[in-house]
Length: 555
Ligand SMILES: Cc1cc2nc3c(=O)[nH]c(=O)nc-3n(C[C@H](O)[C@H](O)[C@H](O)COP(=O)(O)OP(=O)(O)OC[C@H]3O[C@@H](n4cnc5c(N)ncnc54)[C@H](O)[C@@H]3O)c2cc1C
Image 1 (tube, protein in one colour):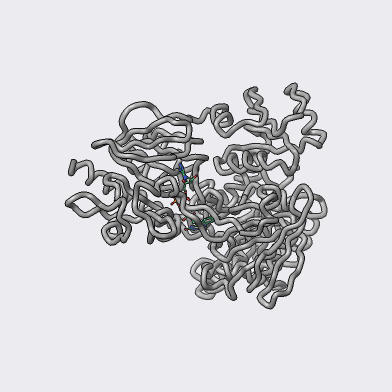
Image 2 (cartoon, protein in one colour):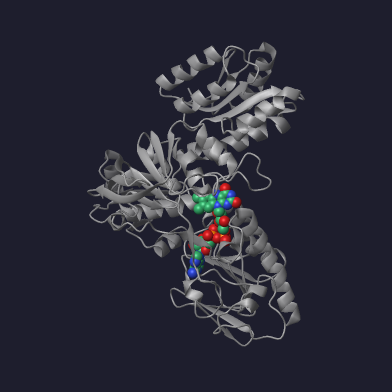
């Protein structure tokens, strides 16, 4: 018997039979298919499966069921099964269905919709189910195969970093507490005593003890040194802007190298679900988007180098040279700087010692399952904080959002505000801030202060901090013009800059995305005036390559 199930709910027996038969013919090997002809029956089935310790991966509810509000049923299903994907079905071209479905999706009570009849099923049913289950199916399938096994104490910060990198690189891994029977068994099997943790076992036999990122990358077959010789374009940062630049550069015949100090995806890689990127109506996880872009770059022949940070940049005639953290130099005719931003730290000294042992900067997707049944706190009011709240509410028993301002509307997209409003587990505390942290080996509670000075201590398993960014441009401070916050100036802004040291030196004006260093372009969040979104970062990455061509043509 399969551990996981689908439940289809429809009061029309013919529609229900057609749907159940289509689901059975494609998914029965992996999922058990249940049906219910009313909301009451559906609720009883959900309760029965939950009590039996099974999971429901997919729930499809007809909007025409009469005995219960279909939206309420969809909402209840999440309480039983935090990860269930929910679909509402409606009759094709039913004029009243449109508003219903729109409301259900906007308020986050359904993940998507189906029109009945959903025929041909290969075009109108299976792609939707496959897309919705994508990440979930991979997790299930990967549970059988773990390319990497990490054995460490639950609160080992280094193990958190490694899990985070593997999660963002979409490498299937398993984590085993070194105090658990399974953890001890793995250590004994590989012949390591576990006095130094984490221990990382790669599936083909390599065992690493407390490895550096580079040692891990080498063991995973990742390139950590660029090929020698002159590149046409070198791209720093493998977030959406850098990945897009690399795909366009290599696909247009430029000798292209892309390097990142960690892995692929940048900030986007930490997003649980990007819902506003064009072409993905059912949303896509940032990791999945990054993995697809990475494969595209690889296919076009981009030289991809990871675990190397760029630490310096200089010009030498027509060549531009970057120094990497290990002293290696990369020479290229042009550069694209796509180094993005990262979250600012909370200036609360007592929280510093809990970094990665309870305090996480960014969404920390890899931590979400560990928050199952626990209380968590999120600081921030932007889209990333909203997404993290919705994602973590699937695991945690309670999510408290600590928001300094008096409303979410100023900084968060409407669709997320609505999803938060209909998620009872999320509690939004406006006009508050975190002022203290408590715990022994890991964070156990935080103190929050409200606008009237009142203090309250909240028990928490994790504090996720998503408050505004600082650009990764310090390494360029002496060589190019930036604004007062460190965002790189490009195009005409370079000419308007009041600072003298790195002023534009050529007769021609700088190209649109060109920095004050001729031949060096900036794209994405690190650029002054950029729109901080995936689509705009991708657009700027692609545009930068067009400008690289113009620069190279002009000689
Ligand atoms: C949790 C979260 C959710 C989000 N959700 C959405 C969303 O739903 N929709 C949306 O449109 N936007 C969303 N965003 C914003 C979006 O992800 C960013 O706007 C986008 O990732 C910016 O891309 P980028 O390539 O400019 O920079 P980044 O994504 O920040 O990538 C920069 C890369 O450069 C690397 N790097 C930095 N310095 C160096 C160096 N010196 N040497 C080598 N490498 C370096 C970093 O390791 C990183 O990989 C979200 C952001 C977060 C954090």
